[in-house]
Picture 1 (cartoon, rainbow, N blue to C red):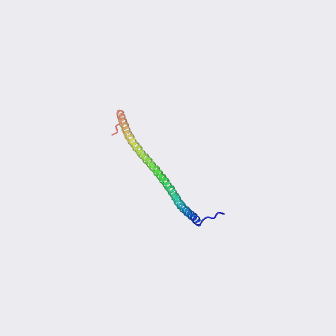
Picture 2 (cartoon, helix red, strand yellow; picture 1 turned 45 degrees about the horizontal axis):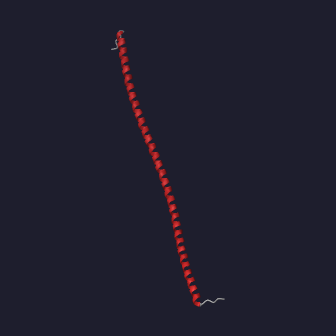
Picture 3 (spheres, one colour; picture 1 turned 30 degrees about the horizontal axis):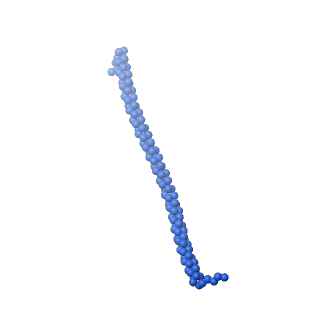
Length: 126
C-alpha cells in the first residue's frame, strides 16, 4: 500500500475543490442561461400570441374594409341607377309633352280641315 504524503493529499483536495468550484460556476451559468432561455421562450410565446391577436384584428379590419367597399359600390350603383331612372323619366316626360303637342296640332288641323270641308259644303259653323 502506498501511503501518500499529507501535502500531496492536500494538493489533490485543493485541486478537486477548485474543479468543484469551476463545476459549480458552470452549473450556475447553465442555470442562468436556462432561465434566460425560459424567459425568452415565454416572451416568444407572448409575442406569438400578440402577433396572433394582431393578425386577427387585421383580418377583422380587412373584413370591415371589404364590407365598406361593398356598401360603397352598392350605394354608387344605386345612385347611378337612380340617375338613369331620373334621366329616363325626364326623357319620357319630354316625349309625352312632344306627343301631346303633336296630338294638339293634329286635332287642331283636323278641326280646321273639317271646318274647311264643311264650309265647302256650305255649312257655316259661326
